[in-house]
Length: 43
Image 1: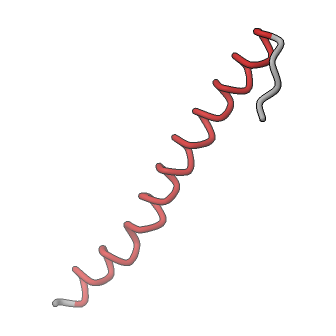
Image 2 (image 1 turned 135 degrees about the vertical axis):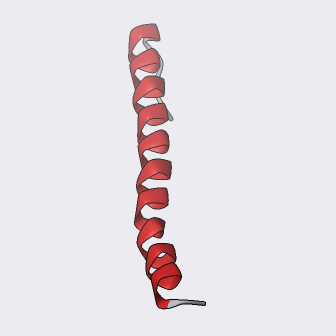
């Protein structure tokens, strides 16, 4: 593997992790807002 490909591979992981985290946080916020609107606890 060439050094440039290895560098790109290593640097892309934080972008993937940030994307997954954003999806999870967004889903949690939507669920929390829906629970608050319906008057039910999240847990």
